[in-house]
Image (cartoon, rainbow over all chains, first blue to last red; front, side, top):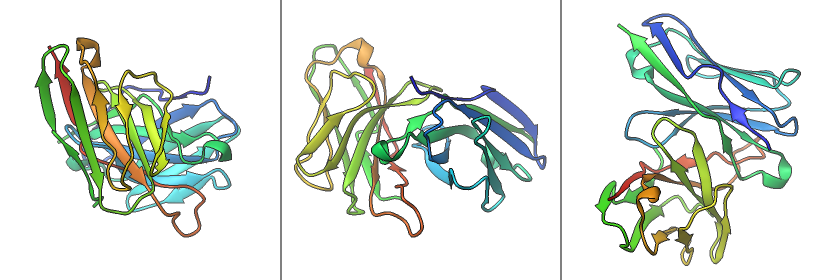
Length: 114
Length: 117
């Protein structure tokens, strides 16, 4: 079946460095992707999204890149801060028939070293 | 900040008890969802609703049931709790399409961490 997964379960970065979190998806029909951030004891919080007709989208200190050829999604965080420490999930909407449902990947834990 | 609430935040209960996890949102969203999440793992959709009197089972089989009698309220019930039900339960909602988008951002509540002894 479809799956959304992440390459690295844990990423440790130095404060101030840039972070890159990767995600692979297997459903070529997926046309909408979201990155969520989940801090300990809290529910996931929306960070940024991207539609399949785009290959890059930027927010405040975050950039999402989509490579449909290899079905790969990445989240780049510039100047990583201690407050960025959390688990990051990518999620996909598997096509128009299920446009309200999300399939989540397994998450990457980001640790920011002071 | 999203206005979606879950109670209780933490619940420890014995096997065989009936429990109801509450979820309410004040955003007027028509769609609501329940996810189950084990620590550090991905979220699995167990129930969803597209509106009042509409409920569907999600991708992960669950012994829980849900109801949607009011737009703002989407409670989840376990008739007889078992240790295998120990997990975190997250409620989410989504509503009107954002400008320029065909899809709905889901807003999440803080979750209920359930432990069944």
